[in-house]
Length: 402
Image (spheres, helix red, strand yellow):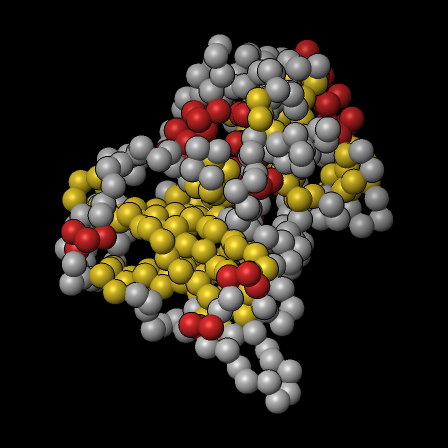
C-alpha cells in the first residue's frame, strides 16, 4: 500500500483536475490537528524589508483569513473519534533574518529536509521559536533562489512544497519561493497561497503521515484536487477533496441553504455567449465518413467522464462582471465531447460565506465548456446587493466519447 505523498506535485499539461468518484480518503488511525496553530517562519534576509517584507505581511493576512474561514469548516469532515477538526489561528510569525537557509551553490542556495529539521529543533531548543504544542504547525518560507530537496527530489523539479514531521511531535511545511513552470499560478502571492492552502489541509488531516490518505494511490486531501482552485477572501486557494460530496470543494455542504434554480424561473439562462467556450464537438471522422450529431452519441463509446465543482466566493459583486474558473483536464486524442451543468446554488451571504442572506434577483448567467485543455466555467450576475459577498457553486461535467 503506498504511503502518503506529502508533497504538492508540479502540474503537468495533461493533469486531471477533478478525479473520478473512486477517489477515497481512508483513516489510518493517526493524529489530526483539531485547532491548528500556524506559525509562519520567514527565513533569510530577503524577508526583512522591501518586497520580501510586504509579501510576508500578505501571507500573514492570508493565514488570518483562511484559518477562520469555511475552508477549515470543510476539513471538519475528517474529524476522528478523539479529535474534532475546527478553525485555527496564527499565534505569531517570526522573521529569521540573521542567517540564510542551506548551503551556497553556483546559482544560489540549496537546503535539504534534514537541514530544515535540524534548524527547527535548534530554534526550539534555543527559544528562537515557540515550542510545539499538539496543534502547532510551522510554515517555513524560503527566499528566492533557494532550492529545497527531500529524499532525492527537489523543488520545481518534482514538487512545489511539502509537509513533514519530526518524530510525530514537530509538524511543519516547507514553502520554496516558486516562480517555475508547473508551480506558478499567477503572482508569487497567488502561487504561495495556493501551495500553502494545499499543505495546510494535508498537514491538518495527515500531520504524521498516518491519518487520512487514499490507500490505493497514497494521495492526501490536496493531491486529488491539485489543479482545482478558487478565490476565497481575495486569495487564491486550492479546493480540497470531500469524501462526503465526492468532489473538490472549498466549504462544507451544509454551510448555507440550497437555492433551487426553479425559484428563479425567467432569470436563469445558459450558456453565456462571452467569453467563447466549446460545449460540444463531435470527434474527428476519417475522410469520407459522415460526421455524427449530438443525438447520435453512443453511450457505449464514452471514454471518460470528468466531474468538477466550481466554487466562486467573491467579496465584491460588481454587476455584470464575468467571473471565471478553469481546471486542466486530459482530453483524449481525437475524442468528441460535450459539457453539462447538473446543479448549482447561488446567493448573497454573510461576510464569512457561512449563511445565505438572500438569493440574487437579477439575471444569473452560467456557462461551461472547453477551451483547449481547460474545463472552464464562467458566471455573470447582473444584480448587486450593496457590499454583500456572493457565493456560487456550479457542479458540471465533461464527457469524452469516440
